[in-house]
Amino acid sequence: MSRSVEEVYKLTESTYKCVMEQFNPGLRNLVNLGKNYEKSVAAMALAGKLYFDAMSKIGESAAVSPVSRELGVALMEISEVHKKVHLELEENFKRFHREIIAELDRKTDMDVKYMTATFKRYQVEHKMKQDSLERSQSDLKKLRRKSQGKNANKYENKESECLETLSSRQMDMQLFIADGCKEALLEEKRRFCFLLDKHCMFSYQIASFHDKARDILTEKLSSWQDQCNDATDLPESVLTMIEGVRTPISITPLPSPSPSRKQYTLLSLLPSLPEHGNSEENNLPRSVSVATGLNNIVKRPRVRTIFPHTAGNNKTLLSFDEGDVIVLLIPDEKDGWMYGELEKNGKRGWFPSSYSCALSEPLMNNNSVSAAPYRSRSVVNLHHQDTETDEATMVLPPSDYCDAPQRNNNTSSTNSVIINNHQGGNPFATVRLRPTVTNGRSSPII
Image (tube, rainbow, N blue to C red; front, side):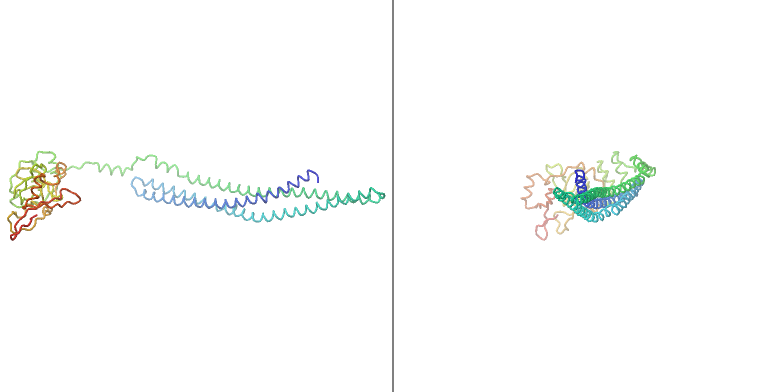
């Protein structure tokens, strides 16, 4: 074979090998990647559906708001539009699987067998023709060696026949190589054309999808954008409701004998309270203290002392005698202590709750033979009044209501007992007990 024939033969072989060793394995890998592509798109569509479902629920919650109803409706519409777009994308990828991936998968298996058989048949035919051509050449060489002897004329006709046979086989070989090369190149091109045509079709589908998606998304996009242009705008009905709340309400104040403006305001806002106390309490003279006058008007709870108490050097405590009346400025007991104002002189301070009883209860003294233990809760049933001002201005007592030397003396005394009833380390939980004699025995009275 000439050089050009040999090159064409090599091109034919390389073409078949390229299809079998590169194109078909690459096509199989493309099919596998295409399946992964489908799974990714399906997962994306599912994630997108979940995302826009969640956004639709948020829109539903906004739709019940008096100011965000239109925004909620817009969010729900956007969710529906995007889910519709994802549905269109899923339909396109179903076609992608049906028309490209499944088709390539089927043709790849068939083509591997076909190209293997075709190339094998080509090699077999080429070998047969090559062997026949080589035999003709060998026969011609033998005849030429014989014709060089004495009987040269005898082999002329045979040599001519052998040359014709050799020329015919040579031409047949060349035609076979040319046709085989053409067929191999066409087989290769048909496969690349098939692959390109399928993906051109897919590109048209995706382009059509994007055009349709653009039309769907932009149909109401401007109206959605208008809903969120001004985040400070409120509906007229809501503004009217808010302005109605801002309208001041006139309150007619009640007459008050106190010249203080602050006390007047407090009295004007207090509701009418039921009267407490007995007739003796109602006939008490009015105190000159403004705070005491206010206490009498708003009916602060009062207690009567059953033991005397000395504050000593502690200015936060209240000193009193047995039988004095104390107006409670804070009706609630705080860890065994109460805060009030002595009615006879207007002094304020803390005092043990166990040293007093409600004004309606009978007075008890130290020599009582039998007396029910006093429960400091007896004063809680009185009406609770406004005590914010008193609580803000008062000074709380120290750990004990007496100085250190006095506390030590009282602790060592046989006539008094200190019970430490701290709760959580609270120093105001200390309670002092006073003794009484019951049936000849010394026992504490709380």
